[in-house]
Length: 313
Image (cartoon, rainbow, N blue to C red; front, side, top):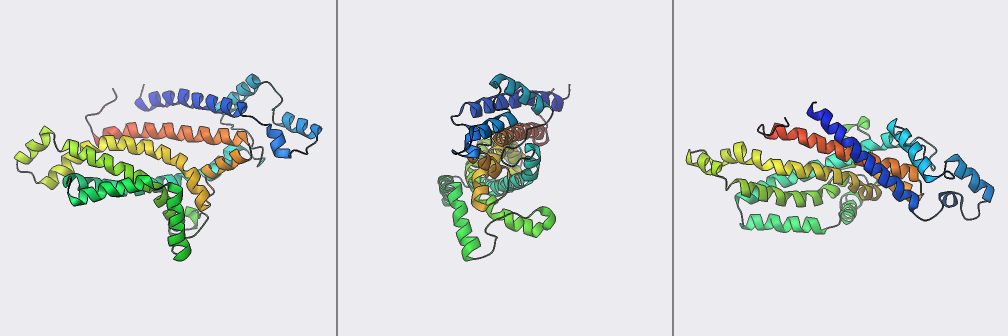
């Protein structure tokens, strides 16, 4: 069986476990969903009607089995708050979240890779210590606080970027980038701070290998050895962590989308939690888990492109 088919089959149990845990966790939380939606002054007959409409009056096991059947067909249910199919809500908001997460990853890799390599080539020099200190500062600053600082400095005081909202790519690439720049920088800075340390450590480790000494002994320039040999091997652990962090960035958009007023999946999830719309919460969590699993599959496939010695026979 091909690698992709095998890995896709392995994704199914992961999504099933996440779906089951999510369903059970949301069902056992205290409070009456119908009471939250209709208010404390709602009439008993109205509460009973709403429970029947959304199946809240049926046994938990029956609701779970019915929900799994719908999930297998791609039906995530109907939102109690929006009165729309959850799948439609997620599809409408997923491009925003993916744009922010991918933009943040571009920022993280674009900053961490060159700085990590420069720091490794000049280990324990003033430049290297400055990179390490900067990475520590980047890890210490909360993402939402950095987002607020960027809004105050680059959107409010100096109107270079919009304060709130999102522009689709169809509205123009320039406008799309203007709306995504600050959220991507705010979300990607912390990931860059973590990745730069990994890049530095991985490059330093590879530079001590025997093949590097052999290449240098043959007269190859240090820059050539670094570019052709060291980086190729050093990128394997970096690629693994970067792929995992892209999945974490999908969850990190919850805060960023709220700060910048972006209509993405994270904000939809947060609104679903506030409104006790469990159908929306379940659908959003499962979508994030499925995206995370597919990203891991993509990273596994990229290994063979980075290092041809890696095979999955």
